[in-house]
Image (cartoon, rainbow, N blue to C red; front, side, top):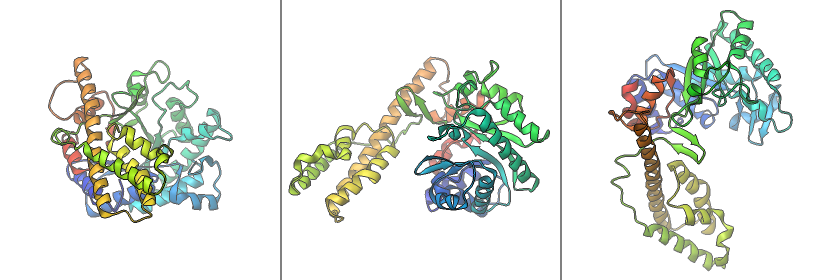
Length: 400
């Protein structure tokens, strides 16, 4: 979500007006536009909201300045992504976040997936070295608390729920001990991690000493924030845990649209003497084989925005006829509905399995709402949901 999109603005504002008192963001979400959006809403609405943001990712607009400033302990993961929790970089990113949010103090400040240090393609570091970097970062963050720039700090990690014996999983007790070594009364109070009905390791797995991450966190007095509540990962791939009733049930599908678009492209390629080169264009192969199998609307938008439309512009030498664009728009809408129908079928099957196995009641509310209720019942303090539309806010309002 980012500034400049009226729907995003309306959703965030509606959530706060409905009683939501927590917003989670990060500098790398839409290249800073997410923090700018939150800042604008906060300026326009006079209500108390607990804001968390993060630091560590070096992407987009930050790539140039960071390279020029030559921070230490920067690891280059690929050409478009570097990472660091060096205190000087944290200071740089903290100030940028404060400016974008329009705040003098950030309520919660996360180190954002420090396990990226293990992914350094040239020289991955071990846990002792990373714990040392985290200790330096915590020392800096305690200073920022004393200066009134942040209230609490913590770590957001995708690997937290797993066993601390894993090479990429940080031990939560060790991290708490690091904070205590800096200040007995410290402000390391928050952790964030993935948790959903398909990835339950935070409550069912063993993190250390025979206990789950959530159990240990409760004993340490930490506030827990779960993310990805409606985006599960399974052995068969990603699963979107949402349904799109009644939108998909009332939609009609015109299967001739895809035939018309493919015939049109064939004709244009033939006109250019390229009729036998179809298989050389992955976007055309994907469209032909999987146009009705894409599992989520984002996949459809990516196929069109990143691949098909650039291809069509090149095919028509940047002069795509109006009637062709109209046909493509109709196909996009149809594929969008089909992707939502695919999501709904998978989610509905999963919902039935959960009910049949006694993990979820039939009670009122949509599947996503009842999932979030379940997560909260398992002891998670805060469930972070990406409510990009007002209708999603309205769907979950009863949980605020």
